[in-house]
Length: 197
Image 1 (tube, rainbow, N blue to C red):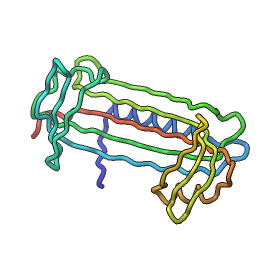
Image 2 (cartoon, one colour):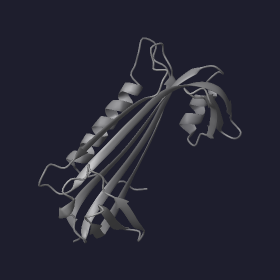
Image 3 (cartoon, rainbow, N blue to C red):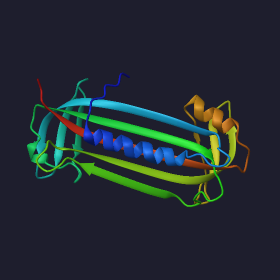
């Protein structure tokens, strides 16, 4: 997928916050643990088809023809300025970091969230960034199926398939009973680029 970035204060704020959260998850210590980080981003460009101000419903048509409907949350300021024909950009960023847990790392999940919105009078826009950090106990990794098994902070066992070579290599180096600090960051930013031109 080709990514095209342009300057935007909202996008910059979302990415800086996300990078800061990810950096703190991977911060070096006296014995720097091996860390695996997976980062994914996607950009969706679309044209506004309709805006229902009473219900804050927005209907978009993506450049590939797909129709998308969503409810604009309170972080999207100045919604009445959004008009059919306006071009919008949605930026999605997901990141996962995993490293051996250190003494002092939280046993219970820690969640952080931040949001920002366009200044009053500007074009509508906003971003939401969330981060969840938790320590899990590694149980096993099957290199044939790429399934990792672990016990979460709630004491329940779970498993799932690792999709990236980086995460599979990280899991292959773990031993049963290893404590692993996992950080998941998700961010979405909406900017209005103006009328279709």
